[in-house]
Image (cartoon, rainbow, N blue to C red; front, side, top):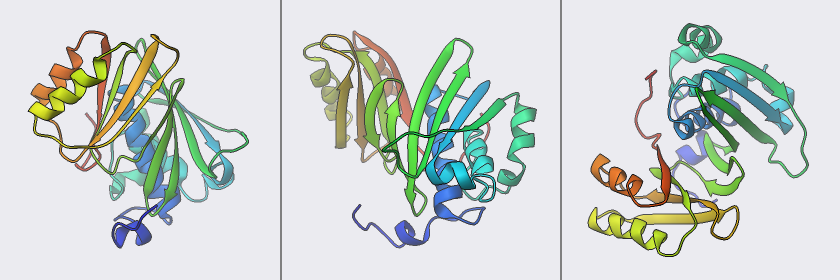
Length: 227
């Protein structure tokens, strides 16, 4: 990973002893919440590698839950995350798991809200930075450093051009773009990192493109709170 600033090394302002095990974990939880689109009613969290062996001692469990509550890394309520989750009506189940090839600081979220269900897999890569590597059955790769759009859609000819045309008219620059699909002409996901936060009207235009099922916005640059 290229050096960006001093905070990439020392980590962000945070509650907790470790930028990887607490600050990064908060951001993983916030990202998973945003993929779901709101507060989960039920959250099953699987810890892998170092997370699995140290999550209690380093407060990773508190940090993950705080992120699901949309708290930021320096929110003092992180210490009371279990109680706050209960007050918010979120049921939490924590488990450890093993899988070859996983980053040592990996968590998988299985989140439910009404009829909605998402599975988000991500890892804390140091300095409070994270990388999301899986959403449901899709292989993805994004960091949440920049405002990010997740566009769930059918794999059809011309749909990417329609998306990028909206960015052009929004005068927004695409810094990174990735597509994964389950099969040819099947379901697909497009991940777009932008240099700017797209205005609501342009996000709505993307959502109205034929064969787009759902759009999620991941923006961790603003302070979080329970929504």
